[in-house]
Length: 253
Image 1 (cartoon, rainbow, N blue to C red):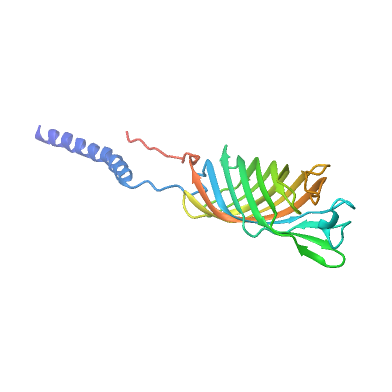
Image 2 (spheres, one colour):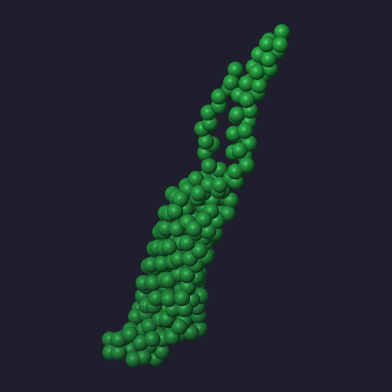
């Protein structure tokens, strides 16, 4: 009788030990801190970028004979004007992603510290002062390939450009088309460094067909081809959950 009781108790103890093993392992795993998934596994929903920007615009216009008068001396009948590079500029953008790869972006660029020159055959290029500038505001599509350390991206944007100059022309609204891309270096889940963003910008502005009161203003449509280089800081917000890991469960009978 006693031997039967001992056998039953030993069986119960053995069964309890078997059942307690997975419970103990589960408790041990739950006690460990949950590691944050790397950027490539759980990419952000929002990317906010703020940085420095350099703009190199290429666009020139020739004043009509007699329009400029003595303001175009030493050649009162003709003058060619072009935009200078803008060394000090700023850029801000916000991107909202629908999944890990595709999103929409809004961007603002401010480059207001360039100069402009006038050219004549006798004296060459002569500076006319700091009277030109570019403020662009665009929106469009952005694509990325998020990684644990590096995230390349490309975007195509369209919007408006507020352009002044190149020779005492007032701020005038025109078209802006931007295409380019860049590379981000991921510091952690929330911060990254935009190592480079390189863009081509086309701006088209019509300064009008008639004088605005300043006889030396240029008139007509002006196309500007610009190269823009930028870099700065990116802030990540929100995240897409990483794929559910495959689990294997075993039951003891």
